[in-house]
Length: 198
Image (tube, rainbow, N blue to C red; front, side, top):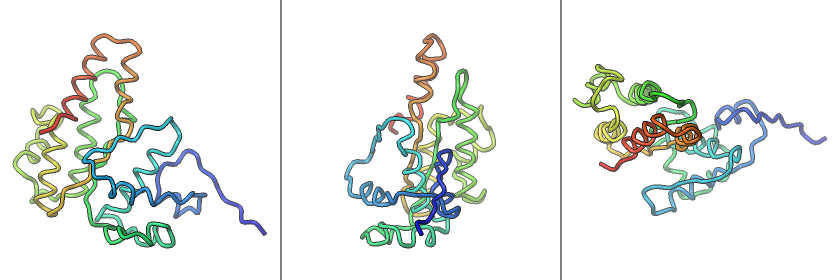
C-alpha cells in the first residue's frame, strides 16, 4: 500500500516538517553546496514559493549548536556528506524581513536582534556594545551595525564566526518601491545601514 503523505504548504520550518511526518523532498545537500561555495556572501534568487526559506531553515537547524538536530537529519543525504561533522557546530544569526512593513522598521529589526542575542548569549557574555543595545532598545545608536556587533560578540564567546541568514531581504524595498517617496528612501537607507560592510 502506498503511504499517504501530508503536505503543508504553509510551513517553512525543516524541524516541523520532519517531526510532523510531512512530505519533504530531501534537499539537505544544499548544506554541502553552501560550504563548497568559496564566496563569503551567497545570494539565492528564486521565484516566491520555491523553498528559499525552507532551505535556509534547514541550514539553520543543521548548524545551530543550541538545537538538538541529530534525529532530524538521520537518513537524509547530508548524513553521507563530508560536512556532516559540522552539525550543531556554528551559531546562526537568523533575520527575516518578511514582517517588515512601511514606516519605521527599526522596532521589528530590534526585536529580531534581541531574539538572536538571547538565543546565544547570557547577560554575563554581552560585549559592551551588545549590552548597550539591549539596554537602550530601539533608540540605541548602534542599531544599524547591530548585526556586525553581534557577530563579533558571538565569535568571541563561541570561537567561531556565526553564519548570517537574511530571509526576504528585498521585501522592504519592494513594498515601498510601489509608491516611492520618503518610505522608500527610509527603506533604502535602513537596509543599506544593516548590510554595509564593517
